[in-house]
Image (cartoon, rainbow, N blue to C red):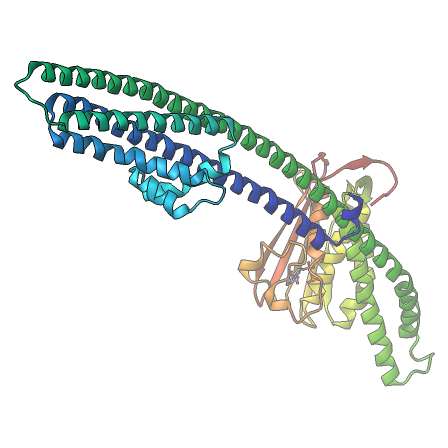
Length: 489
Ligand code: ADP
């Protein structure tokens, strides 16, 4: 695992993919090889059938010839044996150290084998003749050829006895020839019985061989399955570990970077605020005042982004726990509104607060602060100068409702459901600066409280965002509430 750690994620995946491909390749080769061997055995079993049939037909023709003395029967005997001779030719050629494969091929084809099977017949003989089953089968085959040679010689003798002229009127000569023919027929029968035994043995040996290969293949397949399965589990675990490590490293990096950026940005903000609020005293000319406003605005944006990034990372990494304390939401909303007053003023927007005098609820004040800040900032950002914004706080049944309405650009209907996703932005607002994290955080904070968010909006007329927070917080899978303890989010 150590060498894996030193490589990039891409390299690690390349190694993993290469290993998987290698095992798969091995599996395919094993499958192909198994099929080839089984198919070769089948070809030999088929060939043996043709060989035996030819031999039996030849023996029968010879016996018939003994009785009929008809030359045509002797021709048949010779023709049938061509099958066995063909196979013998192939066997003898393949037994040579450097065989002529064409001669072997011709032999097998003469033996009645399908040309499509010949390569497999040659393959099994050449590459597996040392395997015990094949070795015994070849031995049987050789024995069979020897018995066929015996049968041929019986046939030849019978042919010479039948074709030798005798005096058929002489009973002694006739009886002598008949006696020879009876003896030769017996020899033919006995050669036939020996061949039957050899043929049976050949088939039995190939059958046993094929069964043992089948078992071996089954074992290899099972082994391969276990290896692949183990590898799959190992790979899945390693990948999961790598992903978690990479994710953690990324989270830590972004958190650290955001934190480190925040400190100097806060200092810049303090000086920019001082200068902005004391233009005249600082005797700045209009151009310099414009610069200060730009520094303030851009730095404010930097602070917003770093805050949103930090809050998102905390929420996503499960570090966000809510701490419920009795909070006056009206006081909280007033504080947030005051913090944003300069923004509203700059855009000549009017913020109207519609709230009861007090609205006390057990909430996580810091997180509700995030909700209010993002909704009000958005309302200002996406409402043209001079527009109206309303913040409503009310109690509704078992919920507290926070509503932020504006007279802004609105959101296209099709995009209203997606804008609460991380980095999601509506297409009609892309020329306004933004990260797409604000509403995501609003939803996350509501979720942590066991609440919900919704939006209604008409493009060109305005939007209304509504956040419902249950007065009595019930623990949900998303929220982990610590009651009455200090803030930890
Ligand atoms: P952003 O940083 O882009 O404002 P948010 O997550 O806060 O990210 O909002 C997501 C998107 O939802 C915005 O980019 C904008 O398209 C749309 N949106 C949010 N609030 C409003 C609003 N009050 N009026 C119109 N569009 C809004």
